[in-house]
Image (cartoon, rainbow, N blue to C red):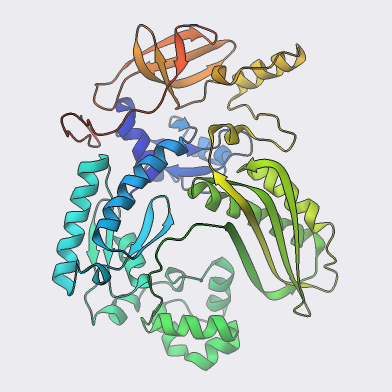
Length: 446
């Protein structure tokens, strides 16, 4: 799917179509989950600190994710994919591998292209959103093709053209080549996939180790035999990094753990999940591997909570001899709930803007709990007894501003209410496509 969260918000809110939209955590430690293509032109991208995004795009719309809404759209898309094949391997809410041959949907390049054309049309008709399709003989190449197809396109890599296509691409294009490995290869004079292949397998093993060296050499030759694995229930979400040189500096180790915790939470949120158990994995200089875990009182997807738990776990591990690998994971998974957005290590909510900060702090000082239904969250749905369906543009100082519009309306009017107005209530998101007429909402009009 193309800029999935942001595109869903634009389709849901007519006033945001064609404008920069940024979805993510709006607190001081928030990060960008998804940026619309209009925001990307301004330099905003996913995983960027929200404070930096605000500097680059001060006039963008900043919204808190509606994961239940995104998941409902994802389920529609995944159903379309399962109609094509029994072998569907979801990577996240908005991306999956599909083995078309296993479903009898495609047997050559042309039948695959026709299946991709129909899939894109079906996605548009069912969800009102656009998706990009990459078609190739392997998972690695299909992924590369889908990235080339964005936004709203289709790219087919013809059999026999793979090596010529990959050759001039950066080594960072290949799966498993992150910043550290990319820098290591660059220092060795290897910048492109063609140069990777020319270096030879023995040299890559010498530079990168046996496992990664063999794998990258095979990928440089466009060899990828990994099968599409049918969807299985996710038991945990984790990330890990292996370091070219053992890390001895305790401060560096702690910083790496914090970075891994943030990456793990991004993956967790991308899957629409939260979890109770935080796991730290440490492989030391002598190849001994230690695992430590901590179970929280309830599931969370708050990066601050995961970072703090991982830091506590690290305190119990001796790293003085050096560290070869670090990993952070979350298990005990649960479906995402709205309350998780406000989870803190102490169980307190992080306000979504400075005005709301003042309101919540005042409530705490008065020992008055702020009711959940009065936590008006930017971008979330509301309904008014007189004005109908709308969404929260902002709140603070006892007031909440709402724009009243629906996916198939024109740009709506804005009104402001007291946060305790009895006529205003939280509401469920409306479908992007009118179920009665079958009309499709596009990026510019209903």
